[in-house]
Length: 566
Ligand code: G1P
Ligand code: ZN
Image 1 (cartoon, rainbow, N blue to C red):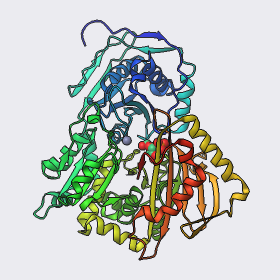
Image 2 (cartoon, helix red, strand yellow):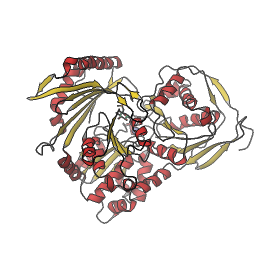
Image 3 (cartoon, rainbow, N blue to C red):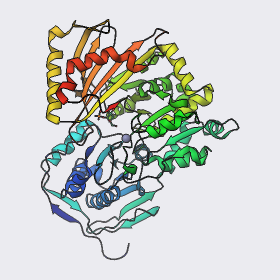
Image 4 (cartoon, rainbow, N blue to C red):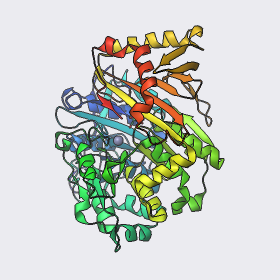
């Protein structure tokens, strides 16, 4: 803190018209953030301006990202702007690295006013990839729609932003740095923290680390393979699974974070985590998991590549919830899933008489329920699983939850899953994604579908496929009324529910950066012991045929198959 106070500068700018945050923050091609003049600055200014000045003055904000290309540059700008916007203290992960769950954890732990996360999650990174910025509020969760809408409105009229251009922060060295600012009484503080420590301490209080250590490093140890896909999770996996829980070093793969994720999609699914699937198929490992770029998503695999559908994963955790010490202490307040997620969790909720909430797609909708003590465990079909320990989904938490179940039940992943289906029946589930469809064409497909579905004659309509008859029981555009604050979210997905309970859902993605992604979700329930072990694609084939027929998606997009099938 030597030399004269650093000057604060006001820079004139002009609005960009498309800065509306999507399902999870503002995501665009990296070059938009990097090359469009003041694009990042505008959005950051709007985030700060959305916080009431009285709350903002002297407050603490957490900052970190998944290490993708442009992460550090963006953080350097955010630091300069935070100082000029009255923030008193920033807590930043070393080298700008923090997983999304770790940001949520730290916000809650230090009672920060919020956090800024630099990530485009599972989207590819690098100069030709995607970049993103997301604002989380003081609960640690993604900003609710009222806040993102305010940010968007501000972005349409912004005229200037405030910055402290001479402030140079050292992101590499752990510890406090203080800066004297012009016309400010108090110095501005930046605290660089270990990226993994607070998060590890939190997990230690949730799980039984000694039981997990016994499982992973005891005489008859479970052989695991965890794939960080060159995203932010590398250091977390190494520190927690290998150093703390004693899993051998070679059980952690792709653990060096890379700015472009090695050129891959850091997306833990059967398509993009194919290497892990292959390694598991050799039979050399009992348990496998992969994480996405920012560490909130997870995919769980058993021996020989046995795939655990994420909708089933949350149901299994629910059914075995008291193997996790945290829930023994807090009890279980409620379960929740996003609307397109299969109804597997509903079966457990019913059997255990625990409340079940159905929310729109996106983790932000779970936050209010958790804050109101109505929700303990929730999940999405999109490889998101988590609990009220933080306000984000949490990939490593899900892995430790599964390992806790295995430690207690002493069964394989496959056996646990099979017993679950035998007890509760099975919701077969699949999702078809058509990525980078022309946005206008996609909008038209959805519009036409809605017109057809909402015609009253559609109710009772019979589809006969593969000698089976499916009768439409209900058709709507999903709407959610938040039970806590009464806010209403409309247009959350077109739903066709058949009389046998099968569901067919069409939705446009809100996280893409180019064109539109159309998602089709299918869920059918079977209890019959002769059916529950069959192949999902075969079991779902009649409803898939109905989906393709009513949407005419192949004819209208020129595609012959989806980009990704889950
Ligand atoms: C996708 C998933 C959704 C998840 C979100 C953020 O959003 O479908 O469940 O919460 O990513 O990870 P979408 O692209 O469908 O809007
Ligand atoms: Zn993510």
